[in-house]
Length: 327
Image (cartoon, rainbow, N blue to C red; front, side, top):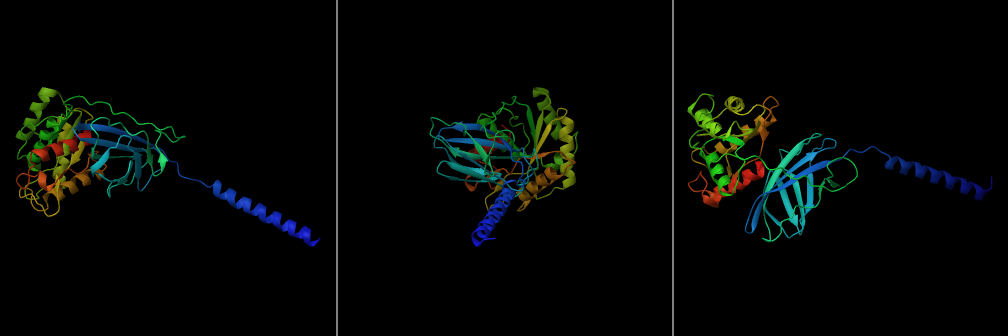
């Protein structure tokens, strides 16, 4: 074989080998990705609004998520919960919190935020992307969609808790919330008040039921004096809520509001709010309980009246957070 022909033959072999190698990369298996997003403006006032975002993973299980979108009318995120949210120009990036990053197929994560707007237009973002892939409501080719939120029936969601739940309900009504009951005198009714399904606390609850009918959802707030509650007591609260609600009612669970670092609630005890939040997370992670952890309510230092309870601004802040959680 002549030298020139040998060189040509070697070049052809190298070229074919390179083509095979590239083809192997291009045809390698990849995870199916798909998602659906529900974005709703839960409440709106001059200069501000509260939004709720619900993300459903339609593809293969993921161990961490980043949801991105762009605002189209100058909106700015000012505060968020149940996710870490950052904004650069019009682009918004929301990353999972430490406890809600793992999403199975059809798994859901929800978070909310407060924002500012121009008092003229506050449109829903046109498209969302999960881990860089546009959400389409399926796993096919991208056709950006946003699922609208259906309005919830008024007074169809009950709640149990103490005066801290009352603070939430007061703020919820004040900002125009309608799905959840308003305050009905739960002050001082901590966990132990609700463990007996025939207690005076549940009699108060049943008076609301006689007005509005059995609720199709119940918020269970874990509330304590002096950091005193057990997980067995929490499970009894959940069972009692199901007994007093409509058949198949959805049970949502949270702890008391958390405070800024260095601030404590003298009634709940120094570690009380953190204990209630931990118990709520434990219940949500327990497959035998079938409850949903909605997230942590938060009160800032300037939103507290007496070291524990919310002032007027704090009540409205709690109300907006509740509306972001549940509508």
